[in-house]
Length: 336
Image 1 (cartoon, rainbow, N blue to C red):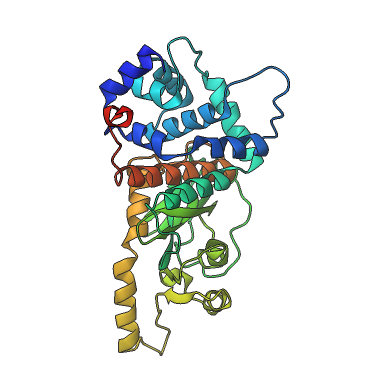
Image 2: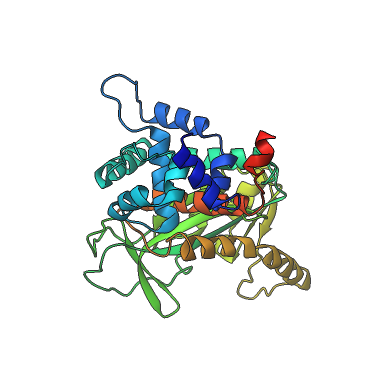
């Protein structure tokens, strides 16, 4: 570490969030995932370090920076330089490099594996419970990056049931975005699903067109879940989903739904009240990802890239939550 990096670290102090994250994670594990997934042999001209490029994408998502502004920030911000390990003599990846790397990750399908690695390392530090008592599943709308060409009478959200999705009609430059109506507001975009534990760490995301029914996505969302109970709202209340929980030996935490001619019993109302008190964590996660990490609106066209954006937002909110739980040992104490 040269004098520039030492002075930068001193100025930022031990409570800097990026410094905490940098010390929290074993970046070598991410290097293995990226090298294997992108099939980089190491032969030929050497490019930028893959972990450096991943850190740059994380910074861009964290601060809501488009690629040109990210390139500029990497040249002038001390915290960005320190986080990425860039000194004054190193070149900075340009905006084209960031864009190509992002597309390479999407094409290789590595985003979910990167989220899994983040969650695994947080668990290893004892900041996230590995065998959580409950997993919470819900969905949120993500507005498309495209300007709509036309508005249609969209299906009311959560009234789709298990019906097939709407016909393949393109209403904007974003070919995968679809209309859905929630209350009085129609939205062109996507529906992002998330699975969290009771502490609010997201360990799985899933993106579909906005008009996709929620209930059929439930089985995908409980895949690889290790929690004892899976909690979800009434949109997922179906015999198929309850049977899927039973087959995987999860306790049923789906809210009970009244049917015509069969109102809820008093015990079912009490059950719904207890589950509802514990489901707020997933709503908090959506709020954090939208308010701080730009998930309110997609930044790119297409379902795959929107999925990648949601994964990066989930990684960001997980790392922020973990950073708020740790205290770095000051450098002076480390060298003592």
